[in-house]
Length: 559
Ligand code: MLT
Ligand code: ZN
Image (cartoon, rainbow, N blue to C red):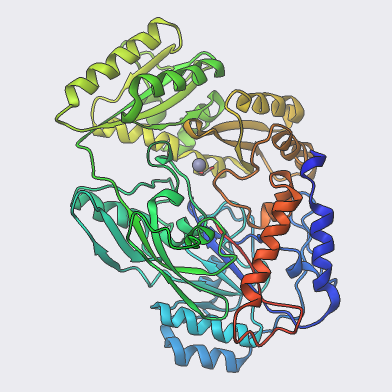
């Protein structure tokens, strides 16, 4: 673990900013995967260097943040400027709307912004950032506010910029070999999924928060989700993007080409940097053609080792038709199938019955929704393969029980169970969430060790994207409690670091994990990231808040 500790270096570096010279910090938070755009600080130290105010948050150990007094406070003149630029509709000061925008989806992170701006196009985003930069006003970009790490809401009184009015589909090339969609950053993911469905294509990205999250937030946070196993990450499917830097400069990288080796491919720096380098305003994305048939199996295994072996078998035997391989343990299953979550019709137990009518939700097993997509023309071959695979898995003892969806309703009920987990946890009380990448063979050891570590005070609920080596470890308790938190952290981060995992597989760093980056990145890597951040902003023209040594720092975040 020591090897990964970069905290000293980080602090030393940040002391450059404690001198009280002029500094503009543009804070950009985004939203991502889940029902969320959030705010977290990628490089939070400069922003927190002021000693004037302390705040303690219940959600993460020793998270103490300070507002940097070098940032200006919004004035009536600022409001007039924004009204002239955006019109009345684009300048939101209404208390209810601000309350919603200041609070993250989980209700864990709360800022105190007095201003939400809603630009209608890239030019307006550019003018907003240029103005905020000249006035030293901190900003936070927000999408659907579905993030899980405190990256999409203000920490203090930052100006919130939401590109939700920028929701046009700009073009779609239907030719099968192309399938390139170009759209504005505020498009809701689910709307893009329906649009493509009508055109005979699919989004390479799907997640539980699709009804609220925006594609700009998805890209800024490199959202993973349920289809990554088959279609890869957004680093592969995003062909180009347009982004606005903190001083208002518009970067047009909105290419639609599959291949372009002319120098650095800078778009990748905006994918997953949680808004720390700028606000994404347009995206071009490669979408695969829709295959006509889909089937889903919901299987139960006796233990984690069988789940792991089943994944390997599925990859070997089913190859290209396997599009998702999810995982939930028995605690997750019993939580989501409880009537409290699913209402009067108890879907969880109704749906998961094998052909003999046996309900296997009550058995202490791990259940896995597996999804398979294949084309109709070759459907019978794939169905035969699939049935042979399932039969063999049962006969060899890898699978203890299971069902294959009989129709589309049953298939969507399976996904409803899996996608309903975050909400079910929220309803169950307090939840400490950890989104980890771990070597597959070690993944469930952490869950079991955490159970021992926590004892009876809380429930450890595990699920995730097994096919991607991504565990969602949730500790569910009746209420937030410092004693429980002290048992979880730093244990969970040290364990992950020791096993060379990542403390954020797909949710980003946000406010929650910005200062924990050293558990997953070497000191040299963190140093280079920070240097790079400075470099980008020191080179910008018109950075009026800067002196010779300081530049705009974008903190940011996303969901
Ligand atoms: C999911 O996979 O359901 C999301 O990443 C949200 C979560 O981790 O709870
Ligand atoms: Zn996930």
